[in-house]
Image 1 (cartoon, rainbow, N blue to C red):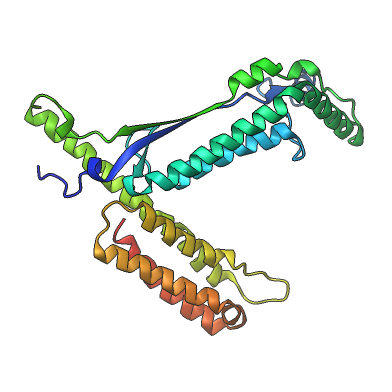
Image 2: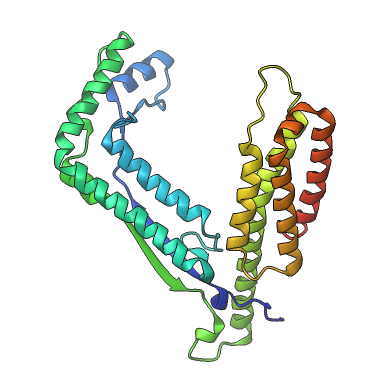
Length: 296
């Protein structure tokens, strides 16, 4: 089997983000029993979400964890195995700096609010009680629903681990032909998966824009958000930063899409006001999407 032209170990590394979060979901036994009796279904359950108020510091902490994970997913590529993801070597510094900033922010939030955790529980109990009273029912909020301060803090952690990409050159002994072929197939699959993901970073918002151009009629009260075009531009920028050893043709196509989207963003008012302009833009973008799909 011919070796892949691109050796992933020379272009990228693996990074694993491990996030552990306290469980903030509880089965409400009282409401669950009532629902099961009402509908005669023993499999129905009522689940209470704790600290859901946007003003709650715990809600802010949990949101910050989710945002760190979202950044990680957006700035890495999938690997053939679940868990670690592919990080292009050229992106290592920017990615690491941003993740360190986000992890530091999370630690600062925990350090700031954990001394007041018991009061935060009381505040959330009050919010839940008020919501129940406003709905005309008795509150089932109970302090026993909440993890203790120590249990909550011990359950919260975030960690980054880097490792090299698997490479047959790393073995200190000769592989037999069968194992060598399996390693090379795995590498080829990883390259194809990364390439497809890179292209889809552009195709997904591009298809959304094409769809919107076909749906929008310019009627009173109908909205055409600039973000539907901006998402295509952002997708192009992300794809260029994550692409592993892209061909000149692929880069040219990305640049063409980005340039076209920027033109439409600059003339978005014309697109909103003219059916002909929308039809022309839709046709042009469909052509670009067809060309782009060839690289996936």
